[in-house]
Image 1 (cartoon, one colour):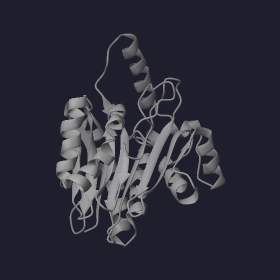
Image 2 (tube, one colour):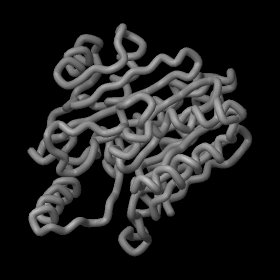
Image 3 (tube, helix red, strand yellow):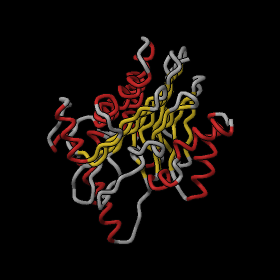
Image 4 (cartoon, helix red, strand yellow):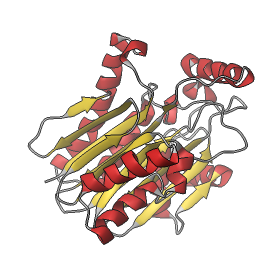
Length: 302
């Protein structure tokens, strides 16, 4: 039973702070991305192409912190990260510290398919993107007043010793195709006001992204440092492979128990090779959606 699930970030997302018209736009954006991936699965395309298609649309949507909607770092620049993994072969591709690449997830997939490497960084990754002809955009394409205001407020909050409610803007997708293969993809602009070239969990295979045909595909969103320290995505897979936990049990143990004990906030989406989908989060909300073969699409926030 082919299945796809997506997320658009997690954190302190409350009905009081999200206007009805904004909520409608978020749900429409999630539905559009979910539909793009599902349509590929429906016509027999593989899970890898499906997650790439879904994440590409989320990157193109300014509402989500990835691609065009990426947040600003402490220098007022945009640094993006992404990774993708194919469960059949355990092949993976990842990039971080890149600028002006229109769709980082497409670059991550190209690293996996067209290079002997797994992880490329910064200007080297950008050079590779140019060599293979991926599209670039000028700085203005990525600039949004909303994101710049978030940077300004973040700097003011830090200066005043105050901390606003967290919102972890990562996007991701996981899928199972009709051939029994799973794939996962994750993309982000990182955290607002990040400094010192900080890298999160999103481009790290095993932390923010993992896929294995023996178990499941996982994409995470949340406190990146905690997801890195717990190797969260791989941990979910290991609990299934070595402890024989179900997908739901493994995700809940990592996200609702282990991460909470560590002090980490966020969530994960996952699918297993039976077509089960799990969307678990320990924060007030997570932008998310899923659809199974013969089923209706479901998208939600809270």
